[in-house]
Image (tube, rainbow, N blue to C red):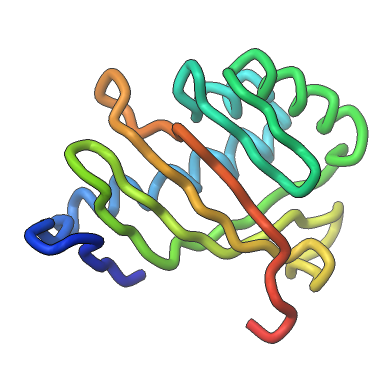
Length: 144
């Protein structure tokens, strides 16, 4: 994973902090693997926003309800994967994290072209924990 500075005078993020931030996708992968909608919603700030193609959910309650329905329906039996690509500082206790990954159907080991995504995560320090203020993903181009 590479790190960049987003504005002149913004210091490079220390490696230990990059590792802490990069662990957030792992928490999401674990919550999804357990199909734990509550744990998934707790990755977000109280008023966090989840944006997927055709989906806009705001606040932990809406996100939890969406994931409960998803785990019982189209996401039943699925897992997800995600790899951090870049961390960009946005200010004190705020970063943008860029990832690549996708949803794995039951039994799949690699993300299909149809399910491959790129994602942008706006993370903020919330009560000592990195949480999502905004998560948005979109389909990934098929060549990378």
